Length: 78
Image (tube, rainbow, N blue to C red):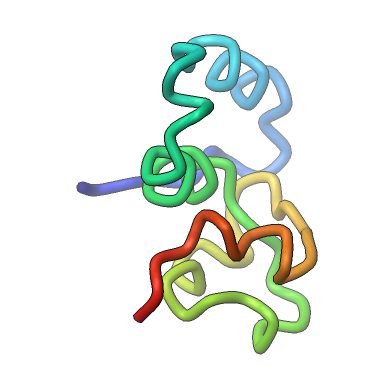
């Protein structure tokens, strides 16, 4: 699957993207991990706290920041 983060600072695009997600997808950890979070993008600070699988999306999109333990439920063990 080829995911492209939203353009940095695109608040309207972010809101539209989230509003268009079917509710059942918001309960699907695989969708959140592989589609939603990468599309929204992550910050590029303290990269060692990010799972390796998310590093390609750091510094793009809305540069979301969150603690590692919050994202862990959405990550597969590698």
